[in-house]
Amino acid sequence: MALSTRHLLGIKYITAEDIQLILETADNFKEVINRPIKKVPSLRDTTVANLFFENSTRTRISFELAEKRLSADTINFSASSSSVKKGETLLDTVNNILAMKVDMVVMRHPLPGAPVFLSRHIPAQIINAGDGTHEHPTQALLDCYSLREKFNSFQGLRVAIVGDITHSRVALSNIFALNKLGAKVRVCGPPTLIPKHIESLGVEVSYDLRDTLRWADAVNMLRIQLERQDIRYFPSLREYSLLYGLDLPLLEELDKELVIMHPGPINRGVEITSEVADAPQSIILDQVENGVAVRMAVLYLLAGTA
Ligand code: CP
Image (cartoon, rainbow, N blue to C red; front, top):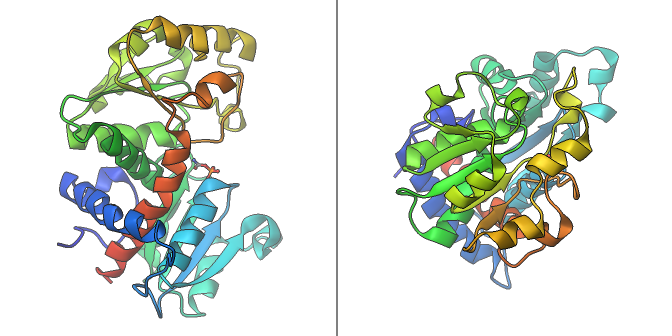
C-alpha cells in the first residue's frame, strides 16, 4: 500500500484510505518506540530539514525525534536565528537549504498556503507542520490515532471541538480528518470565534458548552489564539472561561466518562482547569506520545513515494 500523494500539505488533500494507512503504519512504529532499542534504519541516507518560521515545542521536537528514530539525518532551522531576519525570501531560504541535498522538508509557517507554494517550486517532499490558520495535518492524524486507541472505530463517534475555531488550524484539519473517517463533529465556542457557514464543512455548531459536552464522546479543547487576533472577540478571558472553560464541576455533572483532548500548548485556567487537564480521562499526554509514532509513519510512507 502507498499514499496517494508525495506531500502532506493538509488533510483536505488526502483520502480516507491515506489516513487509515498512516494510522495502521503508526501502530508498528508505536511498538518500535516502546522497545528498549527504539531505532529502525528505514530512513538511513535520507536528509530531512525541519524549517520552523513560527514557534513550536511539541511539533518540532516530535518531528525531530521521529526522524532520528527512523535513522534519518536531520537539520533544524529556526527563522528567529536565520538570514530571514536580513530579508531573505522563503524560496531563497529553502533553495539554499536544498542545495545542500535535502530530501524532505518539514515546515511550519505563519502564512496559510506556504507549504502548498513551496511544493510547486521545489523538488523536495513537503510536510506541513502547521501553516497559519489553515491546516496542521499531523496534529489531526495524531488526534485521530489517539481517538482510535480509545474507541476502536470512528463510525458515529461524536467529537466536539471547543474554543477559538476561527483561528485554529487544528480544528480545520480535525474536521476534515474526522469527517473522512465517519465521525460526527460539533464545534462549540462564542459566536465571534466560529466562522460563518462552517456547517458547509459537515459539522454541527453549538454555542452551549454544557449541551455539547452531553452530546460528545470526546472533546478537544482549544486554546484562544491571542497572537492571531487583531480585534477583541470577547470581553475578557475571565468571561470566556466562565462560559467556555472546562472545569471539574462541569465534568462531574456529566453521567459518563468524557475523553478529554488538547493539542497544546494549554492555557491552564482559561480553556481548561488543571484538575481536568490532569484528570484520569484526559489523554493529552497520550496525544503527545502518539505524535512521534504518527510522524514516523508519515515520514516513512512519504519516503516510499519519492
Ligand atoms: N500542538 C502543537 O502544534 O504544539 P506546538 O505549537 O508546541 O508545536
